[in-house]
Image 1 (cartoon, one colour):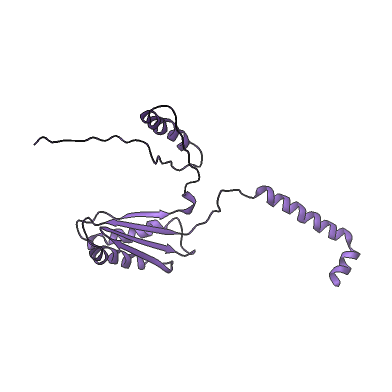
Image 2 (cartoon, rainbow, N blue to C red):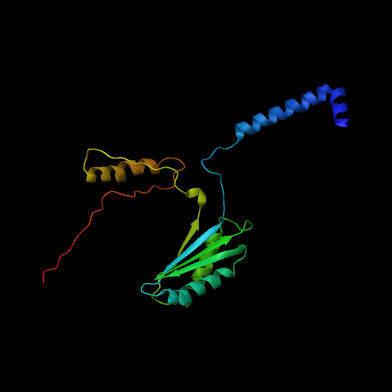
Length: 191
């Protein structure tokens, strides 16, 4: 009741508040960012290690477990945020950090602790590959083209013209050619 009585007795104040809210709404609308997908940041890192010829149990014991133990010592790891997959010759450790972690530094921190465990890994293990998962870096466009020319000419155009032009655009981090032809060299040895 008091709000209604105030509004009836002070119409200029109510009109001023309404105009102010309208101006604020227009200002907010014009400055609002537009994106294909929202800017979501889940700090996650994947550590992939190749152990040629090793069975999954050996990979688990000799590679995955030491890397997991080293990463588990880091701060700001999400609850149930450390998972791993040990398969034939490959160890994959995925670590999900919580929002308190600095998303720009998580891959550096993981790389630091993984490199510290390198001396505990078998000598024939390839160096671990540390990759930061960036949802915002996913592909947003696919270009498909074909023509009357040979596959060699189309492949040359895709690599030397189209890919370079797309990479030079502002906001494009990289492009990938997923098909085409690749040159192969076959060596046959006479018996």
